[in-house]
Length: 216
Length: 263
Image 1 (cartoon, one colour):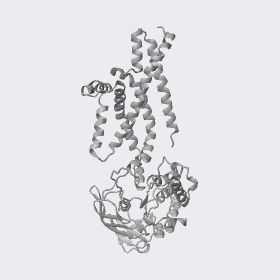
Image 2 (tube, helix red, strand yellow):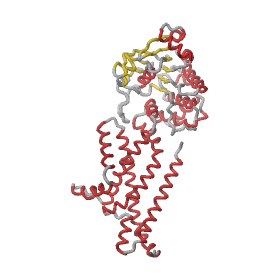
Image 3 (cartoon, one colour):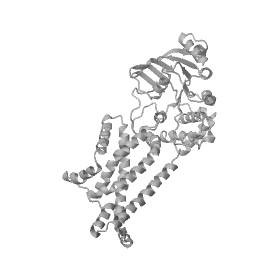
Image 4 (cartoon, chains in turn blue, orange):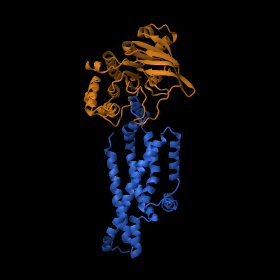
């Protein structure tokens, strides 16, 4: 087994392009997942039975089918229905919709962890519902959510090789292409693994830091 | 403290409950209750646990739905269906801003400092400027003797201090009616006094209407103009502290008071 450092160095720029695509999809997908997850969690506390049921239905669907199947449906089936999106947007939406279901569950738990007395105190002070959520409930629910969100962000990042199936030129796809063209496997896959590590480990540390810093 | 008096009272507040019925499932907790409280009166509600005292306060604040009858606070009806989902800009219940409430468990906001706990509602609900809200926080934290704790978090305070902050937080909305729901029941015995002293001071200084659910009979006797004895969702004795507490002509009241005194 040999490892050609010069070759490894020469493919870094190409792999880096792949990494940028991966990061772009993950960051946008994560934002989508957090926002949608939060909306779904709030919808589950709605007094409107239809809104509640739609939210449960969403969670059930996205948690009980494989991500790869969802990506295939988004990428290959939707165009048949006349809706064609660029591959990267499809990736963002695919990851976002899937992880939103999991993040919604975590949010639900965190929101239920806020004592009922907090809602009552807010109502006794005549807060409207939106203000109660924004100023009282969510700030308290978000604290236990931080490590959970960190885990999902990293999990999502590690899941990106799946996006290769819908032709997104992300990091794994870039490594595979180099390997396919040069018949050298050690260097591209090793550099790829190091790049994954170089992002995951600091992200993990960053969330640990947030967690420590957040008060009380 | 004396500058508070002219700041507080608005138009004549009054509480009127007419034939109010409240059920929790199959259990009737308030049974055709009639009650009328003139502005400025200090009313103590006593009675055995489960008699509906706290529910009366919660109904007046609009925290509970009720099935029959009507409730009016300061001339505005309290809707029978409470706790609705209202978005900003949506029509709010008219009882808004008139009634302050203090809970047994304090329910301070743990993620906010003492000062922020007090300024939050004036800022978010009354839309006061930051300066005005801070001025109120200063005023009411001073009133409860906790100005020096303004930057502390609730978790850093004793139960008695937390409850005093909760009182300041409610007062900062300048309500016409204040409801105290067993506010000393969750406190260690040595902390009860400081909270009662604050309530006593408010009762003497201000013309607010006050309703207190309490098990502190001596305290009730001291500050109340009127004492209501409740049992099974009804008012069974209603009169001055002397009539109800010192010389009860009602057999049930007598028995209850004997029990309480034996504690």
